[in-house]
Image 1 (tube, helix red, strand yellow):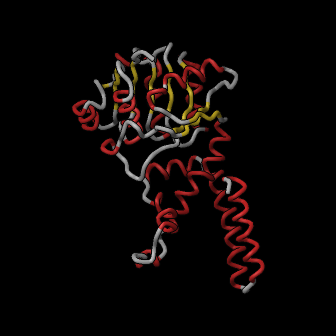
Image 2: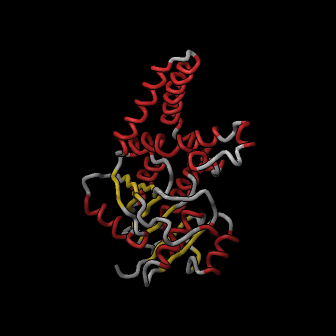
Image 3: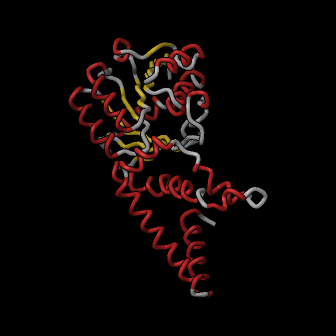
Length: 282
Protein backbone atom coordinates (compact mmCIF):
# COMPACT_ATOMS: atom_id res chain seq x y z
CA UNK A 1 0.00 0.00 0.00
CA UNK A 2 1.37 3.40 -0.97
CA UNK A 3 1.71 6.08 1.66
CA UNK A 4 -1.46 7.37 3.27
CA UNK A 5 -2.32 10.24 5.60
CA UNK A 6 -3.48 9.24 9.07
CA UNK A 7 -4.92 11.37 11.85
CA UNK A 8 -4.64 10.06 15.41
CA UNK A 9 -6.85 11.63 18.07
CA UNK A 10 -5.52 10.91 21.54
CA UNK A 11 -1.83 10.15 21.97
CA UNK A 12 -1.90 7.85 24.95
CA UNK A 13 -0.72 4.23 24.90
CA UNK A 14 -3.22 3.07 22.27
CA UNK A 15 -3.26 6.11 20.02
CA UNK A 16 0.50 6.63 20.06
CA UNK A 17 1.02 2.93 19.29
CA UNK A 18 -1.16 3.39 16.20
CA UNK A 19 0.90 6.44 15.25
CA UNK A 20 4.17 4.55 15.69
CA UNK A 21 2.87 1.64 13.61
CA UNK A 22 2.14 3.91 10.66
CA UNK A 23 5.48 5.68 10.99
CA UNK A 24 7.73 2.67 11.63
CA UNK A 25 6.05 -0.29 9.91
CA UNK A 26 5.48 1.30 6.51
CA UNK A 27 7.09 3.93 4.31
CA UNK A 28 5.61 7.12 2.99
CA UNK A 29 2.85 7.63 5.56
CA UNK A 30 2.07 11.03 7.04
CA UNK A 31 0.74 11.00 10.60
CA UNK A 32 -1.00 13.96 12.23
CA UNK A 33 -1.80 13.87 15.94
CA UNK A 34 -4.08 15.62 18.41
CA UNK A 35 -4.09 15.37 22.18
CA UNK A 36 -6.12 17.02 24.91
CA UNK A 37 -2.92 18.35 26.48
CA UNK A 38 -0.69 20.24 24.09
CA UNK A 39 2.51 19.19 25.85
CA UNK A 40 1.92 15.54 24.88
CA UNK A 41 1.35 16.50 21.25
CA UNK A 42 4.48 18.66 21.36
CA UNK A 43 6.50 15.74 22.72
CA UNK A 44 5.04 13.39 20.09
CA UNK A 45 6.16 15.75 17.33
CA UNK A 46 9.64 16.20 18.81
CA UNK A 47 10.09 12.42 19.12
CA UNK A 48 8.83 11.74 15.60
CA UNK A 49 5.76 9.84 16.75
CA UNK A 50 3.73 12.23 14.57
CA UNK A 51 4.74 14.48 11.69
CA UNK A 52 2.62 17.43 12.74
CA UNK A 53 -0.46 18.46 14.71
CA UNK A 54 -3.93 17.38 13.57
CA UNK A 55 -6.06 20.44 12.83
CA UNK A 56 -9.37 21.18 11.15
CA UNK A 57 -7.38 22.30 8.11
CA UNK A 58 -5.53 19.00 7.55
CA UNK A 59 -8.25 16.71 8.91
CA UNK A 60 -9.88 16.69 5.47
CA UNK A 61 -6.69 15.27 3.95
CA UNK A 62 -6.69 12.19 6.21
CA UNK A 63 -7.43 8.87 4.54
CA UNK A 64 -7.90 7.38 8.00
CA UNK A 65 -8.72 8.98 11.35
CA UNK A 66 -8.29 6.91 14.52
CA UNK A 67 -10.06 8.30 17.58
CA UNK A 68 -8.43 6.91 20.71
CA UNK A 69 -10.19 8.68 23.57
CA UNK A 70 -12.61 7.60 26.31
CA UNK A 71 -16.11 6.85 24.90
CA UNK A 72 -17.78 10.13 25.84
CA UNK A 73 -14.82 12.20 24.66
CA UNK A 74 -14.66 10.22 21.39
CA UNK A 75 -18.29 11.00 20.62
CA UNK A 76 -17.87 14.69 21.44
CA UNK A 77 -14.76 14.94 19.26
CA UNK A 78 -16.59 13.42 16.31
CA UNK A 79 -19.55 15.74 16.79
CA UNK A 80 -17.35 18.83 17.08
CA UNK A 81 -15.26 18.03 13.99
CA UNK A 82 -17.85 16.24 11.82
CA UNK A 83 -17.81 18.88 9.07
CA UNK A 84 -14.04 18.61 8.60
CA UNK A 85 -13.60 14.86 7.98
CA UNK A 86 -12.58 13.62 4.57
CA UNK A 87 -15.80 12.48 2.85
CA UNK A 88 -13.80 9.83 1.02
CA UNK A 89 -11.85 8.79 4.09
CA UNK A 90 -12.57 6.46 6.99
CA UNK A 91 -13.02 7.20 10.70
CA UNK A 92 -12.62 4.51 13.35
CA UNK A 93 -12.44 4.50 17.13
CA UNK A 94 -10.56 2.33 19.61
CA UNK A 95 -12.98 2.30 22.55
CA UNK A 96 -13.39 -0.79 24.75
CA UNK A 97 -17.19 -0.70 24.50
CA UNK A 98 -19.16 -0.31 21.32
CA UNK A 99 -22.90 0.28 21.77
CA UNK A 100 -22.77 3.97 22.65
CA UNK A 101 -19.91 4.96 20.37
CA UNK A 102 -21.41 3.07 17.41
CA UNK A 103 -24.92 4.43 17.90
CA UNK A 104 -23.71 8.03 18.04
CA UNK A 105 -20.85 7.55 15.58
CA UNK A 106 -23.10 6.08 12.88
CA UNK A 107 -25.56 8.92 13.42
CA UNK A 108 -22.93 11.64 13.09
CA UNK A 109 -21.34 9.93 10.08
CA UNK A 110 -24.66 9.67 8.25
CA UNK A 111 -25.45 13.32 8.92
CA UNK A 112 -22.04 14.61 7.85
CA UNK A 113 -21.44 12.18 4.98
CA UNK A 114 -18.32 10.32 6.09
CA UNK A 115 -17.72 6.62 6.85
CA UNK A 116 -17.38 5.42 10.45
CA UNK A 117 -16.60 1.90 11.66
CA UNK A 118 -16.50 0.96 15.34
CA UNK A 119 -13.28 -0.85 16.23
CA UNK A 120 -11.71 -2.46 19.29
CA UNK A 121 -8.05 -3.49 19.11
CA UNK A 122 -7.61 -6.37 21.57
CA UNK A 123 -4.20 -5.31 22.85
CA UNK A 124 -2.64 -3.23 25.59
CA UNK A 125 -0.39 -3.30 28.63
CA UNK A 126 -0.68 -2.50 32.33
CA UNK A 127 1.08 0.79 31.59
CA UNK A 128 -0.44 3.94 30.14
CA UNK A 129 0.84 6.97 28.32
CA UNK A 130 2.73 7.71 25.13
CA UNK A 131 6.04 6.74 26.70
CA UNK A 132 5.01 3.08 26.66
CA UNK A 133 3.66 3.08 23.09
CA UNK A 134 5.33 0.81 20.56
CA UNK A 135 4.98 0.11 16.87
CA UNK A 136 4.39 -3.63 17.38
CA UNK A 137 1.64 -3.24 20.00
CA UNK A 138 -0.94 -4.75 17.63
CA UNK A 139 1.21 -7.34 15.88
CA UNK A 140 -0.71 -10.61 15.87
CA UNK A 141 -3.55 -9.19 18.00
CA UNK A 142 -7.26 -9.55 17.15
CA UNK A 143 -9.21 -6.52 15.94
CA UNK A 144 -12.99 -6.46 16.41
CA UNK A 145 -14.90 -4.53 13.74
CA UNK A 146 -18.44 -3.20 14.27
CA UNK A 147 -19.57 -1.77 10.92
CA UNK A 148 -22.94 -0.19 10.23
CA UNK A 149 -23.50 -2.67 7.38
CA UNK A 150 -22.43 -6.31 7.55
CA UNK A 151 -23.03 -7.00 3.87
CA UNK A 152 -20.53 -4.40 2.64
CA UNK A 153 -17.43 -6.55 2.15
CA UNK A 154 -15.77 -3.78 0.15
CA UNK A 155 -15.84 -1.62 3.29
CA UNK A 156 -14.43 -4.44 5.44
CA UNK A 157 -11.62 -5.04 2.95
CA UNK A 158 -10.94 -1.31 2.94
CA UNK A 159 -10.62 -1.24 6.74
CA UNK A 160 -8.23 -4.20 6.69
CA UNK A 161 -6.14 -2.57 3.97
CA UNK A 162 -5.86 0.73 5.82
CA UNK A 163 -4.86 -1.08 9.01
CA UNK A 164 -2.14 -3.21 7.39
CA UNK A 165 0.78 -1.31 9.02
CA UNK A 166 -0.61 -2.27 12.45
CA UNK A 167 -0.10 -5.98 11.62
CA UNK A 168 -3.25 -7.30 13.32
CA UNK A 169 -3.39 -11.09 13.46
CA UNK A 170 -7.13 -11.44 12.83
CA UNK A 171 -10.33 -9.51 12.25
CA UNK A 172 -13.70 -10.36 13.78
CA UNK A 173 -17.06 -8.86 12.81
CA UNK A 174 -19.52 -8.22 15.64
CA UNK A 175 -22.70 -6.30 16.30
CA UNK A 176 -22.12 -3.68 19.03
CA UNK A 177 -24.56 -5.51 21.33
CA UNK A 178 -22.69 -8.78 20.86
CA UNK A 179 -19.34 -7.08 21.37
CA UNK A 180 -20.33 -5.52 24.68
CA UNK A 181 -21.94 -8.72 25.95
CA UNK A 182 -18.85 -10.82 25.22
CA UNK A 183 -16.32 -8.19 26.30
CA UNK A 184 -18.01 -8.01 29.72
CA UNK A 185 -16.88 -11.61 30.20
CA UNK A 186 -13.53 -11.72 28.42
CA UNK A 187 -12.09 -8.40 29.55
CA UNK A 188 -14.13 -6.37 32.00
CA UNK A 189 -14.76 -9.21 34.46
CA UNK A 190 -11.07 -10.10 34.47
CA UNK A 191 -10.17 -6.53 35.42
CA UNK A 192 -12.95 -6.27 38.00
CA UNK A 193 -12.22 -9.59 39.72
CA UNK A 194 -8.46 -9.01 39.68
CA UNK A 195 -8.91 -5.56 41.18
CA UNK A 196 -11.14 -6.92 43.97
CA UNK A 197 -9.00 -10.02 44.59
CA UNK A 198 -5.85 -7.99 45.30
CA UNK A 199 -7.63 -6.17 48.16
CA UNK A 200 -7.46 -9.25 50.39
CA UNK A 201 -5.38 -8.59 53.54
CA UNK A 202 -3.40 -11.69 52.59
CA UNK A 203 -1.95 -9.74 49.65
CA UNK A 204 0.17 -7.75 52.08
CA UNK A 205 2.12 -10.87 53.06
CA UNK A 206 2.14 -12.81 49.78
CA UNK A 207 5.84 -12.45 48.97
CA UNK A 208 7.64 -15.76 49.05
CA UNK A 209 4.35 -17.65 48.73
CA UNK A 210 3.25 -16.65 45.23
CA UNK A 211 4.15 -17.77 41.73
CA UNK A 212 2.40 -17.96 38.36
CA UNK A 213 -1.16 -18.27 39.62
CA UNK A 214 -0.93 -15.09 41.68
CA UNK A 215 0.72 -13.19 38.83
CA UNK A 216 -1.89 -14.33 36.32
CA UNK A 217 -4.75 -13.46 38.65
CA UNK A 218 -3.51 -9.97 39.54
CA UNK A 219 -1.89 -8.80 36.30
CA UNK A 220 -4.77 -6.58 35.23
CA UNK A 221 -5.49 -5.21 38.71
CA UNK A 222 -2.99 -2.54 37.70
CA UNK A 223 -5.51 -0.54 35.68
CA UNK A 224 -6.51 3.01 34.79
CA UNK A 225 -9.33 3.77 37.27
CA UNK A 226 -10.94 6.61 35.31
CA UNK A 227 -11.03 4.73 32.00
CA UNK A 228 -12.32 1.48 33.47
CA UNK A 229 -14.95 3.30 35.55
CA UNK A 230 -16.39 4.74 32.35
CA UNK A 231 -16.26 1.40 30.55
CA UNK A 232 -17.83 -0.51 33.47
CA UNK A 233 -20.70 1.96 33.85
CA UNK A 234 -21.38 2.11 30.13
CA UNK A 235 -21.62 -1.67 29.98
CA UNK A 236 -23.08 -2.19 33.45
CA UNK A 237 -26.01 -4.36 32.37
CA UNK A 238 -23.74 -6.99 30.85
CA UNK A 239 -21.12 -6.68 33.57
CA UNK A 240 -23.64 -6.98 36.40
CA UNK A 241 -24.95 -10.17 34.79
CA UNK A 242 -21.43 -11.64 34.84
CA UNK A 243 -20.83 -10.47 38.43
CA UNK A 244 -24.10 -12.01 39.62
CA UNK A 245 -23.35 -15.26 37.81
CA UNK A 246 -19.91 -15.49 39.39
CA UNK A 247 -21.28 -14.73 42.84
CA UNK A 248 -23.80 -17.54 42.38
CA UNK A 249 -21.09 -19.99 41.33
CA UNK A 250 -18.75 -18.97 44.16
CA UNK A 251 -21.54 -19.54 46.67
CA UNK A 252 -21.82 -23.15 45.49
CA UNK A 253 -18.12 -23.69 46.21
CA UNK A 254 -18.40 -21.94 49.56
CA UNK A 255 -21.44 -23.99 50.60
CA UNK A 256 -19.73 -27.24 49.63
CA UNK A 257 -16.68 -26.38 51.75
CA UNK A 258 -18.75 -25.17 54.70
CA UNK A 259 -20.72 -28.43 54.64
CA UNK A 260 -17.59 -30.57 54.17
CA UNK A 261 -19.28 -31.93 51.06
CA UNK A 262 -16.38 -33.65 49.35
CA UNK A 263 -18.39 -34.99 46.42
CA UNK A 264 -20.12 -31.69 45.65
CA UNK A 265 -16.85 -29.74 45.73
CA UNK A 266 -15.17 -32.32 43.52
CA UNK A 267 -18.09 -32.14 41.10
CA UNK A 268 -17.88 -28.34 40.90
CA UNK A 269 -14.15 -28.45 40.26
CA UNK A 270 -14.59 -31.12 37.59
CA UNK A 271 -17.26 -29.02 35.87
CA UNK A 272 -14.91 -26.04 35.75
CA UNK A 273 -12.07 -28.15 34.38
CA UNK A 274 -14.32 -29.61 31.68
CA UNK A 275 -15.63 -26.18 30.69
CA UNK A 276 -12.08 -24.90 30.27
CA UNK A 277 -11.28 -27.88 28.04
CA UNK A 278 -14.48 -27.27 26.08
CA UNK A 279 -13.87 -23.60 25.34
CA UNK A 280 -10.09 -23.45 25.06
CA UNK A 281 -9.00 -27.00 24.25
CA UNK A 282 -6.99 -29.41 26.36
